Length: 274
Image (cartoon, rainbow, N blue to C red; front, side):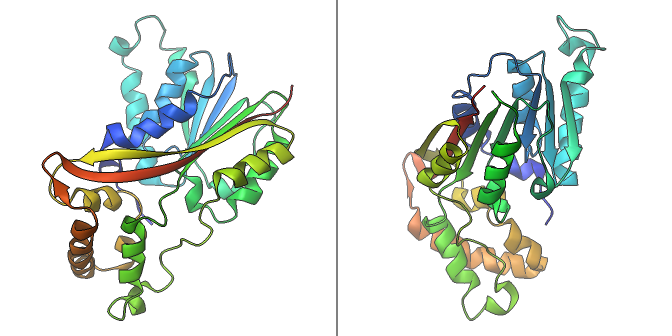
């Protein structure tokens, strides 16, 4: 499945806020190595390098399109005007990006902090992987994760219902994964506590006010609708979106202030005992 980095970073203020709320709960003082699992286009990974300027920050993603965007941001950050107090020799070592599959990743012995923002929902079995990652992290290390909790929201249920309809089931049967895509806050808290960690888990529903025509459709085009678009021809995708957008307008009516789009997210942060 190909990703469109430009589409993904639309609604940046809304999409970025859960990441910043997540990282704010991490109290790691001076990590040596920070890993961003599912780093996407790298713009948020770069903020980790800004917070911990002495750390090696490594973003990992399975999308070559996303990593091309991430590397262009990294190269831009290396320009002399971006280095007020740091040399060109210091800067490249702080931020790096690697092509990799989250399902095959394991923490190195020197990993001090792992952040995963809106990525684990794409990884079947990630709850079992989380238990293994926590087991393998070194004492004192941190793990911070955030996943969407809106799989039962109209934006997702209407998409699945349309995909499973008589018109589309032949082309889209089994394309959309939803059952067990993510756990509850209590599920992630339990995994972290069972691993012996000090842990915190919570959920937040952001009442987002989106602007423009069919803004909810534009939102899901960057994420949840990607498997559908990847499975259809351009003509089929346009037809699917036409029917889906009609359903979305009914579920999320426009107001004089814009379109209110509730956005539920699930967070969990853990620290292994030192």
